[in-house]
Image (cartoon, rainbow, N blue to C red; front, side, top):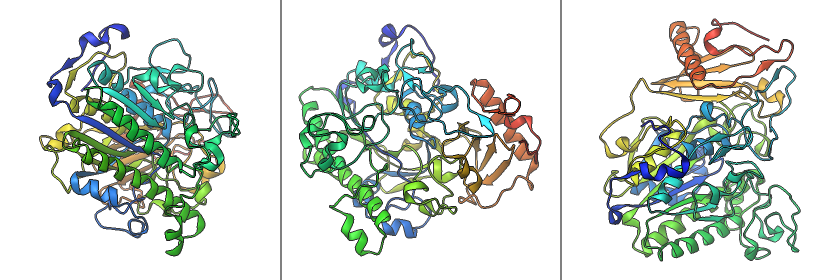
Length: 521
């Protein structure tokens, strides 16, 4: 589905068509996890269970998978803000240009690089209306849900608008309720003993990452993940008095750093032989899973489960550096290569599960690929919203036909990623894990990764080589150049950005402007 501007923002509601009767419209829960890798679960998303699947206990993900369908080729962006901006607007990251993480207004988060300068990207995030520089304007699907009768609830991480911009507050972007969402992309701490980043007098000891709105839990011993869940359940109780279907965006800060241990689960992972760091991480994973179970239990106990769609997703690949050790083998996301921030599968392939009673077949798997901007038209279709007018171009395509069994991914469909940044310190670029300035394309079974600074091209058959171990570019030069042309043409068509070389000030070539094997310094 492609929707473009049909009127002013103030008048868009008149162009929205709702095809379902109010009593037939389902509740929708989007359960979003932060930085959760494809393998950070006891649910296998590969063809067989792996040692990482056996490391973690996520019984409620197992429960949801048995009730619904696993989407084993679901993609997001490699960094949080780009994914969340694509989710909210339906635009590909190359189009909305929020291609790194956002925080302070008018401030880039790029790491310094001795070789290239970064483009002047949209570091103020997305916004609901014009007037803010370095932003992309788009109407959120949440606003469309609200305008057509949904009660909309945001709980947890927002991270789609910079500080001191309208979109820093989810209430400005379509939500009736906002619990703990603000500009920051991570928590100062998960510990109520440290007041989630505040001092007991209400001042902040961590000025930017303190989690707001949870002062009733300060020094209570309640972990942040649990506090958010308790508040979500209260919000669902309130939603029952509205006589409206609800949309709950349960957007956890877990499993993002800091790796504070969740004492409810930490000791058992230490007893299994995990070191302190990995036990802390595993405890964050299981605490998130308990939250999922609590929401499933609530919906069951209130007789709402049969009229609720639940979508489980992560915003980018699992952490594979820094707080978990700077590894060179992607072991934290094995068999996927690398992790968060990388163009390789470990940075962009996500665990996804969909429960939709009467539509999906319980306990099944779908391997057709999809990407985060697809959530926009998909959720609107689930809600019975057929046509709508918005100021942005929607790049996403509905995955409802995949769920209903009425369609499949067009083998010619392309997915595109563009990260023209130094997200990590420059020394990580030399580790061979896909960090640095990259763009990438997947079409069918093949994926091309292009490195802006060096001109390197890598081609992989993802279906046969999910770990991206064998670069086929030399063996398949025609396909390499064909995908290079398609990628370059797409990036130019959406006015994408690229870095420039420091010595000359010239832009790095697009992927179709270099021949195979060129090395550009």
